Each structure stands twice: as structure tokens, then as C-alpha cells.
Image 1 (cartoon, helix red, strand yellow):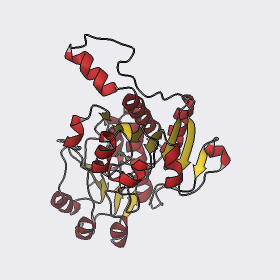
Image 2 (cartoon, protein in one colour):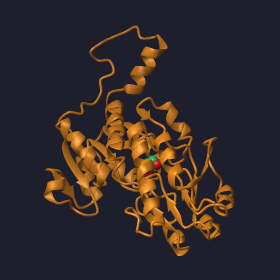
Image 3 (cartoon, helix red, strand yellow):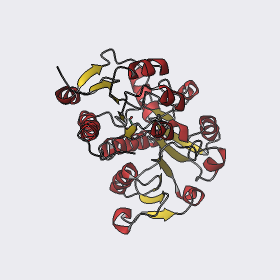
Length: 320
Ligand code: DGY
């Protein structure tokens, strides 16, 4: 009889991850790859020792309170853990881990894509050529905002923020940042630290968000903070939708306070904000910051490393 722990993998993970997981666990895999309601998560908890979820499964305080005592660990396939009520899970004695580091390059790539696409009319240009109605050219046509040599503001200078700063330096951008703590000089690499977000924003011709969604950061970008940015600035969000007051973003675009935005995250996911569809200066992607083959494997393996350590009686590297 197998003594392997029973592991529920809530979504369709990479083939390499599933192969490796099958070596050490009895797997329950979500072949259909659908989303799970709170009731389904609670029902499944009676059958499994461990759960490997994505940010799409929500472990609210109510869910945490109702999970069966059989579940010992939630090994997330994500760096963000705003879908988990950590104090409530901790109170139940459930270990929670995440997957930092391994998705920083892929996420910064998407942030840079959003920045460039938003600045240079990617949506409008692609739509026009694709429509077959492109019958005009002029030097005053689709004039965008130059990226090279401009100032970028980064909120959250953790792993992804630091990679974004490196990519921005490749475009000769002057990097400004806000972080809870000033970084040591070897990590700062010449970036200019601001002690407050209010101090940072007037320097952000481009602003890229890389902080977690918490009670303190929800609605961080709102009417007041948009007003502090230089007129015509560009906003990029590859972190979490909750950081932005989406009505305030629409108002800032309508008043030209912002010239464009690039968004990979939305308050409502999946789905996004239907009001945004009217704006061809919003370049949107469906939360695919970490969606490369290499990174998906690395995220899956990191989650399995955490599970393997836990079931070997050790503290998982990424225990929160
Ligand atoms: C993360 O890891 O937090 C990404 O948003 C994908 O879930």
C-alpha cells in the first residue's frame, strides 16, 4: 500500500511539474483546469494531506476555518499570497509557502512589454493594421512617448522591482524607487531612493508597480496619487489589480493626466474591467506575467521543493 501523501494540484501545471509530483505524491489533478469555489475547496480538504494551488484559489478566513484538519500544508504556485488569509491559516496550524525569485525575470519582461506597448500605441497601431484600414501615414501620426532616457518610478524594489530596474537601465532610464527599506548600494545600482510614495511620484514619467497587495497598498494609485505624477505619465501594473482604483485610472486617462497604461492585473480576475475596453491607450494582458515555459517549470519545482522539505520533516525554504 502506498504511503505517499495525497496532494491536490488545483490547476493544470506544467508536464514536468506533474511528472515530478507523481514520484512522491498520490495526485489529485484538476484535468479540466476549472476554477474552484470555496465549497469545492473545503470538500476536497477532507481527502488530501497537501494542496498545491495557484492565486486563483481563495483561502479566505472562512475557508481556512472550514478546511479539514487533514490538510497540513498549502504550497502555493505563486509569489503573491493575497489569495490566502495567512493569519487564519496559521491559526489552523497549516504551513503556507510561495515561489519567490523564479518568476522575477518573466514578470519584469511583461512589465517592460506593457511599458513599451503603452508608450508607443501598441493597441491602436495593431488594431489599425489588422483592420485593413491603414491608408494614411504622416510624421504626426501615432506619436508616442519616448522611453529611452526618461525617468522610471518603481514602487516595491523587491526581486521583480530590481529586475525591472535593470531592464530599465538598458533603456538608459533614470531609476527612482520607493520601498519599505532603502536598498544597500550594491542592489540599488544607482537607483534614487524616495522615503515616501508622494516623494517618488513627481519623478515618475513611467511608473511600474511591484509591491504586494495588502490592506495598506489597496487603492495605492488613486485620484490623489495620480495627480502627483508628471502630466502625461504612463502607468504599468504587473503586480496586483487591487493596487489601483480603476475609476481613478479612467479619470486620469480622460483628463490626460496619464497618457497611457499597461495592465496585466485587474481588480476582477478573470474578466478585467469592461470599461477599459473603450481606451486604446490601455494595453492589457490577462495576468500572464509569469507565463513562460521555463518559469512555469521553475514555479512548479519550487512549490514541490517546499512540499518535499515539509514531508521530510524540514522547514520549507519559502515558508511564510
Ligand atoms: C504570482 O506568482 O503571484 C503571479 O501573479 C502568478 O500567480
